[in-house]
Length: 101
Ligand SMILES: [Zn+2]
Image (cartoon, rainbow, N blue to C red; front, side):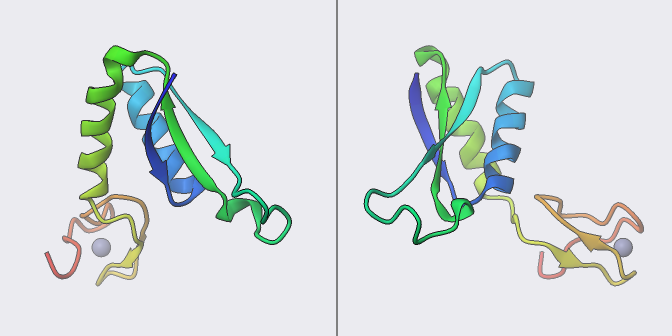
């Protein structure tokens, strides 16, 4: 088991795990609570670490995650009124691109 990345929230962590496993990389998320502050922070604020089962897949996993990080993860509203979430840069309703690209 080898740590490859730290996700900022569970949505991001799930997205990365899904992406890694879909490419044949065995990956899991480990919740890492900050020492001493357990109870002071909500569980979704704890660091989420992405671990890969096989050492030889670590480099590939890091590349894939870096690629995803470059994609905007915020949600945005399209001109047609559709709310787009996740890493999508194009509206699935009307095909318009994310504003600012
Ligand atoms: Zn649209």
